[in-house]
Length: 87
Image 1 (cartoon, rainbow, N blue to C red):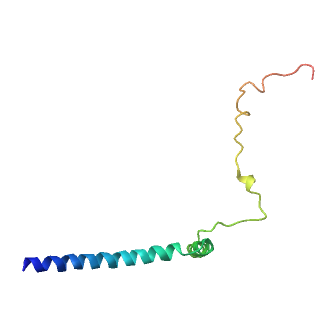
Image 2 (cartoon, helix red, strand yellow):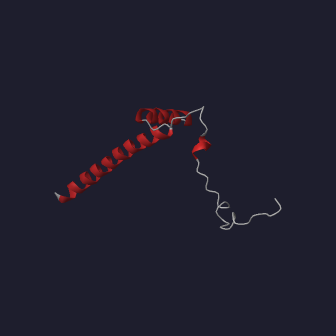
């Protein structure tokens, strides 16, 4: 009886592996068959639904909010001590 169970068990495992490989292969093929435009459109739609798109203000100047951290302005601690007598 043990000799007849082994082939059916092996056959069942092989069939199960083939079915799992077919399902995984289908999803991989489905994902890679999309063109770059389709993937970009899907990403844009998903971003629009979740609200992760940045807001763009075409009238504003983005450089106004940059702090002035010039190290040369802070390099000379004696910059304001000298007075020119001939001025």
